[in-house]
Length: 143
Ligand SMILES: [Ca+2]
Ligand SMILES: [Ca+2]
Ligand SMILES: [Ca+2]
Ligand SMILES: [Ca+2]
Image 1: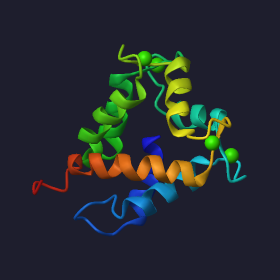
Image 2: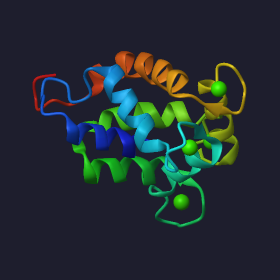
Image 3: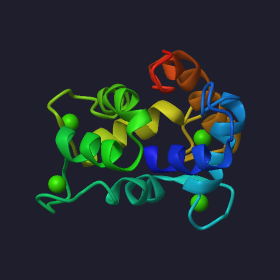
């Protein structure tokens, strides 16, 4: 899902913290993750947002190395943050992201347990999360 963070970063010209304001970033992430644009973030769309990180080996499983090295290559300022996010996604802490991790992570965001994430649920979850992790973003030697 960091892919969407990256999209948000491109929209922001402020180097102090590329992801502020967090609510706005979370909203942009929601729009970018809602691939079919129906206003709902669904379980299948969570899978889609992770496909891009699956590289070597291409096996449907995303290792910590696959995830963090992709981020480091594309957006080095988010490298520290990428490790924290990986810990978050990897619910069972085995250093591999698999279907059961996504299932559990999806449930965390689905406050009313109706099996899809509304913009409100998404922004609420990510707003809090980004606020607590924002200090990890490398803003160019001034952190
Ligand atoms: Ca959707
Ligand atoms: Ca893989
Ligand atoms: Ca795991
Ligand atoms: Ca819901």
